[in-house]
Image (cartoon, rainbow, N blue to C red):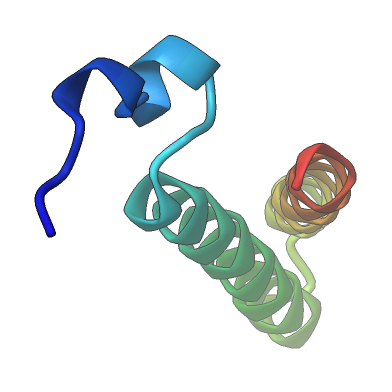
Length: 73
């Protein structure tokens, strides 16, 4: 049995993202959340409010990106 090449549709043609790209996006978002949490914890220990704000921002940005990725996929 052979494959009819005229019926083969690529991910690019369907607009579907490659699974690896989806995973990469999720991993980057999770890393951003972890980095934000770590910065916030360090900032609280050092009593550095600016670093704490940066940590909060990164954590929220990572959470938002994960939510968007979940809604897309």
